[in-house]
Image 1 (cartoon, rainbow, N blue to C red):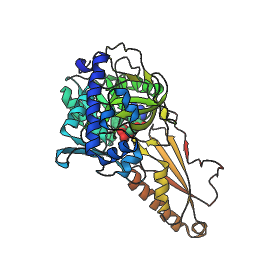
Image 2: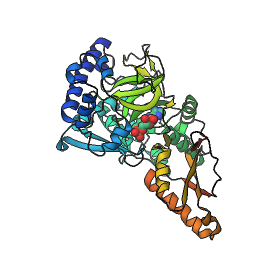
Image 3: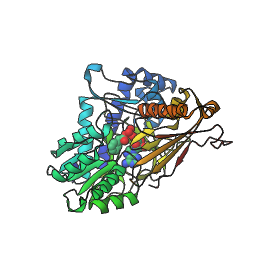
Image 4: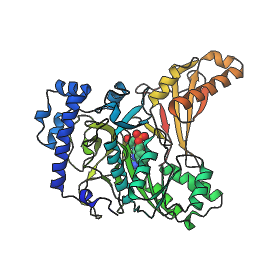
Length: 433
Ligand code: DLL
């Protein structure tokens, strides 16, 4: 089902006109209202008067995660505080989280983007959406919620976790559409099997999965276990949350909501825009946003555009499912984690050496498990074991509160962790996705 054929199937020329008008408007807003952007534009010698076509975007500066961090919490706001109606955040950088502030118009854009996303998976008002993305400050829960309401579907706002209850609701409320991370979908399937629940006999027939990398193999496994169609959905807190791009029934590439979020693919080394079809870093300009709009935001996600038209009839540009990232960000149980965050937390804990190794596994349960090996000062090993045990649980506690994920800490003696002459290897990721 196409939620909004007028925009999703629009003639490319007409869409370009829309994009240009929105883009010019955005540049003017940022120049006049956000000192950070005005300074950046002045440094590059450009003003809104220099913007005549969409390709003039290349004259404008990029925005990075560090810029967001340095402007925490409100430095990039382009609307007055009284116009802000909602805030979301994601973890992921050392120190400060990434903040997105929405006006009511931003929420309308999000509703639209997510209605298109869910409709791409076939959602109609007859569907019962079991939404197991976290609500809280994460964008997944609210995004799906708004989209489902906009379609007129029934939504079960489960949030994440509490697997036993998820299964009870899945069965007793005849949910037809599941939304969660792909690894949680597999975990849930396994728990259903252990509980003797036959998923294939339930009405659940489709799912929208994202927020972490997954593969065609995982899709096959989810589709088989639930007897459902599994769709890839993509988004990020900085831009809007989920709703940036989504798969349609063709399940080949994700349609970018490009009338709302203008995409580019650049060479991450030179910053130059690449021709359609080439692999590079995905960049978005939030041409329609009001609260915290961003200019050329570097996502660090690697993909390429698929310029050929899609069989579904939508004319929006498709992007390949992600190939990876240009940085070392890990996504653990849907939570973004940088090794530098772990390092920063360790520095603050007395008794530890600045040597650590993060080992990530996807266990039998399909959930991510993390072991953090930390070197501790020699004295701890000659001490009684209680000292070691206390230190271990303190580190686990600090990590849980700073990273929002539980990990297992293993304390090791000084000089145990292999040293490297070049860039230190901090992560061993054994997940076969
Ligand atoms: O993960 C938003 C979201 C919620 C997307 C629910 C889809 C469903 P963040 O926590 O800010 O936002 O993380 C964004 O997650 O830059 C990607 O690296 C990764 N990511 C998101 N979707 C996918 C996907 C949400 N479908 C970061 N495949 C992004 C692979 C994904 N990686």
